[in-house]
Length: 300
Ligand SMILES: NC(=O)c1ccc[n+]([C@@H]2O[C@H](COP(=O)([O-])OP(=O)(O)OC[C@H]3O[C@@H](n4cnc5c(N)ncnc54)[C@H](OP(=O)(O)O)[C@@H]3O)[C@@H](O)[C@H]2O)c1
Image 1: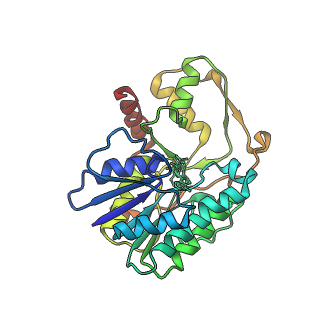
Image 2 (image 1 turned 180 degrees about the horizontal axis):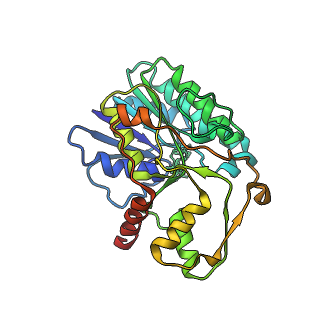
Image 3 (image 1 turned 30 degrees about the horizontal axis):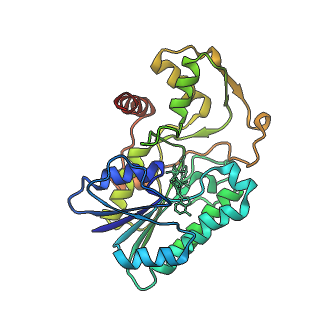
């Protein structure tokens, strides 16, 4: 099975490349805007691919004719999307339409990665049957891209996920675990949102779900996240506990006080029964996830 990954320099993209290169039944084609930033360059093909460039998308997809495309690439900074709506549209909606268009003569299974932000956060945890009501430009763009994929006529899976954590090969990229740990170690005060609830998702768990969706040719929408729904500040407290760091530097802040450019849903979380059943999805607990990320940071 030939699987093409978009956004292979991103957090999920990198985890997918590392996973798929271990699978003997998979030929992996990693694609990303610009240079390949994954340290290990062996065991897969790499192509430079800017998804906003229609010609580039058609030529790479026609060249490789993948059985499956796992489309992870997106403009993911929610506030930046709010401030630059045209750029958001281009990278999240036009890019997805370009992929669908390039596949028109192929029978490619499309796997699209979407977000809990398609919901408004008034009635979480959400199941696949719940009605989306996106609050931000980013969330609207992701929902519109879902529609492009689901109406493409291709076999498709949409995997919605939420706060994905883990480390990538590019050290400059932070995450909630690293940020909390580093700040507390340096005795730096941090303000952490106390009234938003999420089910944090270990990037490796999400990558496994993507592989299973491809391998089993699963179709439809799947909710893929961690099982525990907790506040963002509780994640920070868990990090402090794990590393034995002083919690006094963690200060709660409400969504209203923080007043970020993009609106966020307050309480999401997912019902993950469908993914557990159809994708053999068994997410690690947050404590286990922190332990795994710590091991990976130590190995760097
Ligand atoms: N991370 C989360 O908490 C979270 C939560 C819910 C849903 N999701 C969804 O999950 C997916 C993966 O997220 P992630 O955390 O892996 O995101 P990420 O680390 O921000 O990676 C996204 C990647 O997309 C690439 N990209 C953006 N525009 C592109 C374009 N026009 N052509 C080619 N590549 C492009 C970026 O390239 P550069 O590196 O060159 O900028 C980046 O490497 C996304 O679709 C996101 O919406 C993520």
